Image 1 (cartoon, rainbow, N blue to C red):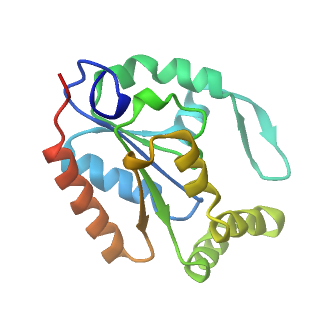
Image 2: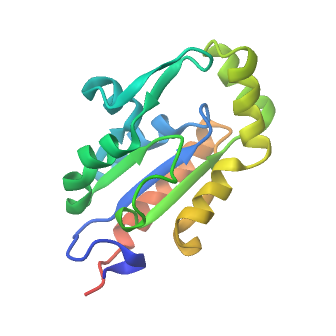
Length: 179
């Protein structure tokens, strides 16, 4: 097994960037992909493009993702390494896929403003704010992956995102597969 239980023989690490909607996952992932030349996989886009869902959730106005189909679609890509996976959930991905799990966290007032600007209202807005308040995604990550690969990063400002990308880029450069 390679470092932290990842796939043997991979020459580059895989990173999962997760967090409540509006915490900056896509911005961070895109910038990190550019800095590292890794592949950015936005799971939400993949689900839409490849129809990896079981329909539309009217209350939350989103696709009901079929986790098995998503994992089947990503399996070969993940084995090769060099991927940044961007998604608000993390507990259904195989543990062996990731060498670093980043949970982005945003101050509730900042998050409220971001989600409101996106048009989130009612239960969709309330549920996402509550997820952030109760650190649901951080807890999910800690329960799903070895704690030493899970890192929570503040993501309130562009400066935070820049600092996070620099820190993660340094981590990628220092990563070495276990023999």
